[in-house]
Image (cartoon, rainbow, N blue to C red):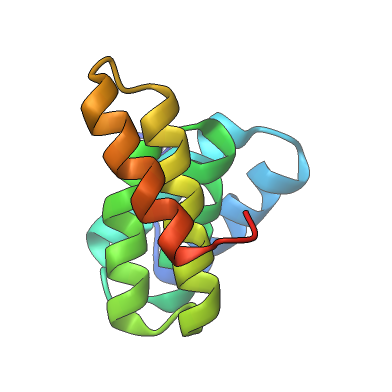
Length: 116
């Protein structure tokens, strides 16, 4: 999180993010990663870190949007992107209150990663 009155450039921002991760402050790291992607949406390290943190925190809807961005930037190879999408669909299905929607997501996940 940016501190009031502190001007944070990309190198300092990345350093603060890495420090938060090393210290186990995942919530702070997630906020910093979101800020980094918002300010520099084409930055691979920021998108990759944001995706990892969203997956780790169970922010499935947000991770779905970040995954689309990561695919566009080629942050993940095709196989990793398919598997990550299958995991996301599975988790979204688990939290879906609509049984038909959940079944549809699970079918899509199985097509993407039958071994999941």
